[in-house]
Amino acid sequence: MITRLSKSLCVCAIALFISLAVFNNLTDYATNFIFIQHVLSMDSIFPNATVDYRAINATLFHHVAYIMIIIIETICALICWYGGITLLKNCKKSTFEFNRSKKWSIAGLTLAFLLWHVAFISIGGEWFAMWMSKEWNSIQAAFRFYITALLVLIYVALRDHDESIHQ
View 1 (cartoon, rainbow, N blue to C red):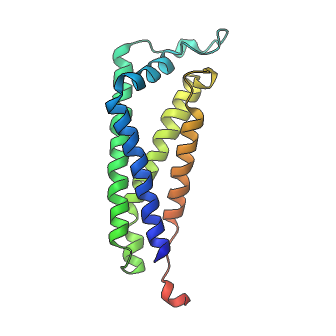
View 2 (view 1 turned 90 degrees about the vertical axis):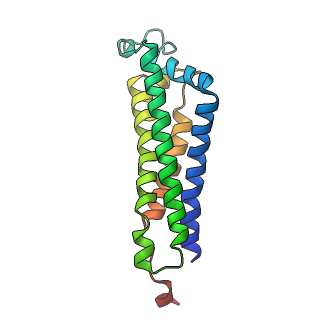
């Protein structure tokens, strides 16, 4: 029972983190938008870098990219909340029912992993060379979060067994 409760609460913790990220992005849109703008414009990469041809300087595109991130974060949060609550509701049910109830948590955690890894590490970090920026670099923060989401995903995805046969 404690393992099931633990898995449920870990998913809810990820949902809370993502919800706070969405809240911050919505309530402090301008500040966080500047980050996206600098990364996509590649205006703070090394001066001798030759990858700046990838820069996108269209403000409309910056807004679209940022809004897409917020939308995906919102979807992640909602799916994780639903998944975590579904796990909580199924903690006392059969092993089969509990394992089956993991699908939403697995989906939400996978989407969170993909968002932070693909958008921030792969696209932002490598394609737009965010790693070269001293001021506009969120690779470490994104890494911390996507690893956390991945670890929770692995933990949740582990099959639960009938504890009564092991007592």
